[in-house]
Length: 490
Image (cartoon, rainbow, N blue to C red):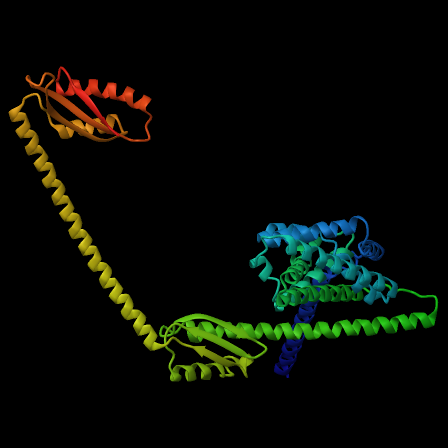
């Protein structure tokens, strides 16, 4: 009996401990829930009236706003043309395009048909003016060319959709807060990039490149739709009051119109997201196929490649020959649905180099290389012969001068005189020296030392006369002669 009592007490103690544990766990989770609610709940900071007034104030497009837009277009166009990210960012910050887009999202959320019409009209006017201004800039500006800033806005992907959506959410949460967070607004203006796509579309129009035009306009449409969608969601979550109409029938009619328009906008938004997401998946797997199956293969030398998503084709251009077995192998790897499930139905267009042509090029290269080596050897031999000849001439000159010295002690090395004369008088083209036999009475014969000088014909006679006097005195001193005659040859 006593044993059974102890057993019941132990069992009751265990149940009581279990209940206390459950109570503590419940309290812990309630604390976490309360903490997260206080951390993430932003409804208490919402200023309904100020938010609506701020959005409506940015919708009108006239006067200063129109000029700001035009100037922003030109700033963005110059930034795109100069491939300057900093300048493009500046254009994003000053662009007023965000106002009507938020107005469209707000009008859907609040069933405000008047604001919707106003926002849509102003946005359409802004788009038309932006396209016109950017078209004129790129049409008349002569230095327009493709670059990374332009090309980065002609092919949107899933990241652009997510940036527009989450950026729009951040913007609206900041807008609804008491004391708007300016840094968030600036960040969203930069991240969502409304102005650059419009300017890129204007560039496509100016250059007649419809791919650029529609690609950039598509990116702008994505940003517009998903920013408006984010605005709609935030205002609905915060339970902003619906717009009231005095006439019940009118209110119902406007509500129906707003619902239809909202659904009409939402459907393309959903399809846009799905399409861009699928394209992104396909591009990712194509890049994976190129890197994993081709670039990692040391026997394949890929020169370039391209893709055509509409035709479901991947074109590969190889430098080396590609055998039929290799083509089959690559095709089998492409259709492997486990590795590349999104590439089902894609085909490869492979172009390899002709083996014979490659062999001919290789053979010609080797022959030309051998000819070049042979030419280098010949040139080296000729250079050695020239050096030997120069040494021989120098030796002969020395022997001639030594013989002259042995016969006449007053004669010195003529090679030194000639070199020194050229250094002193750069306009001398030729110099000669000899002892000339002369007779005035035709009986007595005298030996006269004579130097023959040939000057540059471009030097005036007045300068030559002065230089000849200096030259004669110098030669007379160097040759240790009492007299010396100069003869000019022109």
